[in-house]
Image (cartoon, rainbow, N blue to C red):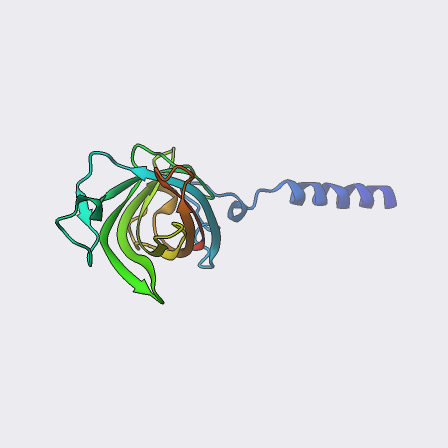
Length: 187
């Protein structure tokens, strides 16, 4: 009788252990974990180079008659990030909306703002706004970014979030590198 009871208990444990709990598996119809309403960490290591076909933008506060006081208004983004994977450099970019020259304690900086679009290799994407303060002596900069709510597609649908940005010129000054550390929130 003890053996029969033991086998019965083991069978129940085996059946209970093999049952699928649908809240543990993310499918297109079941996004319970994705929609957890808690911040989900995100990181990205990125590089941007000027889009040679974009229009120039004046660095405000500098002489508009000097062609050296203009930058191309759009940068093409590549790299990798958590949740987005490999960034699609053919579709990802950021664009300057304003660049302002400032002197701070006698040192030259620019304050920059803009918008952008980040697209993963699978086509999932989100739009964002960004702002940075960049040293004109060494190219280093700090700033932030915010995902535009309701702009996401695919796995970013319904997401919002923000991140801190650090970066600088690459060695040959043909572009910039930057890192984003932040979070995503799903509504």
